[in-house]
Structures are given as C-alpha cells and as structure tokens.
Image (cartoon, rainbow, N blue to C red; front, side, top):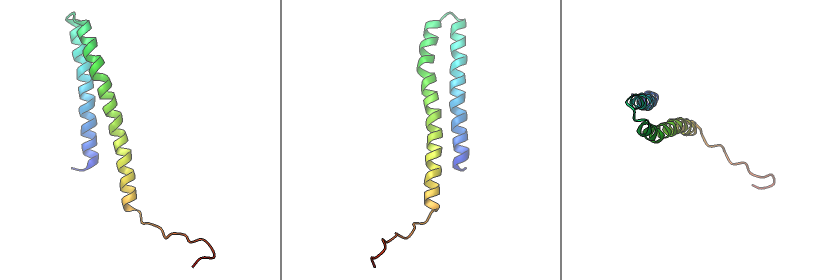
Length: 83
C-alpha cells in the first residue's frame, strides 16, 4: 500500500468521524439534549477540520521532499577572474 492510498484512507476516516459527529449531534438534539450536542460538536468538528488541513499540508511537504530527493546538485558558479 503506498502513501496515496494511506492519505485517501486517512481523509475518508476523518470525514467519517466528522459526519458521524454531526449525525450524533442531530440525534442528541432530537432527544432534547441540545446543549450537550452543541458542546460535543464544538469540540470535535474543529479538530477534524484542522486534521484534514494538516493532511493536505503533509502531502505538499512530502511531494517537495520527493522532488528534492530526485534532483541533483549543480556545480557551484565561480566568480570571474578566480581560478
């Protein structure tokens, strides 16, 4: 399993947690516990959003690392008149 599949599974899991929390919050409101639903959603949803953003940032950083690993260093440029 490569990194692309792992990132896709991580994002799917994070979205599932966020949607599950929203469904649970809706059910709690249905049961008449709106304050508890609001408190739990206020804690879970921002964490999921932050984690989803961090996953995208990690993917960008990893692609830069892969690009640098494939590159070769260039010869240093000497100023004119020096040997």
